[in-house]
Every structure is written in C-alpha cells, then in structure tokens.
Image (cartoon, rainbow, N blue to C red; front, side, top):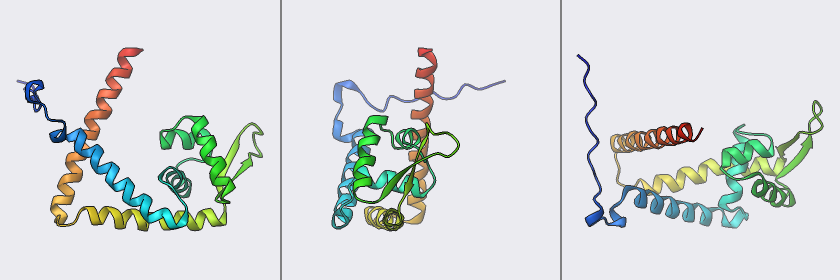
Length: 166
C-alpha cells in the first residue's frame, strides 16, 4: 500500500496576511541588509555588489564568456556587457578573442582583478558570520537545510511552470 504525502498546510491566510511575517519578505529583507553591509565593506575598493559578483564567478571558474557570466549572474547579456565595460575600465577584466572560434570573446581577470577577487570570500564570510551572531553550529546547519528545502521547492515549481508553457 502506497501512502500519499501529507497535504501542505496553508501557512498563510489572505484574511490576516501580514507581509512582515512572510518568509519571502524576511528573506528579501535579510538579503537587502546583507548586500548593504557587503557594499559598505567593498566601498573603499570601489567595487559594487553588481561588480564583485562577476569577479568572483570568473575567479571560481563559473563562466568565461559574456553569455555564461550573464546566465550565472542572472543578468541579460546587454547588462553584463555594460558591467564588463566598467570592470574593464577599472583594469579588472579583459576581453580576449578565442583562438579556436573568432566569434567567441572570453572574459579573463587581469592580475588586479585576480587580486580583487581573492579578497571577496573573506568579506562575504565576515558579513555573513556577523549576521549569524548567536546561532549555534547546529542551528546554522538546520537553517541551511530549511532554506535548501524552500529553494528546492521553488526550483521544482519553476520547472513545473516551464514544462506547462511548452
């Protein structure tokens, strides 16, 4: 005999909905506050949140072309091109035409870009650790597990919707 999974409770009710008590609202607020603090930490170096993300992605090997970086940074190609123009003007990246396919332009970190990218993880760890003040390791792991479940649900819902549109 197979069991049906339990029905998901209705955690929210439109009759008494309070946005500030919504998990989504709290996650967005936390993200905004963390981003603001990260931006403050990078201010002396002149990096913005929009700029350090692609630098870190390049440094970690998560993309080498405009299209790959745009996809991994969740930006459109035009926005990524303008962002890379700014990073190139700062001397942090360079565009290099592929020797195998002249249509492909690879994005590489300069020595200055590599040095800047190497500082990013320390800043992110410091800011995130400060926001976890008072948590135990077990609570931190539990929170990550719960957030992973929400993310997995969101990914599945997106996949279902994309499947329905085809």
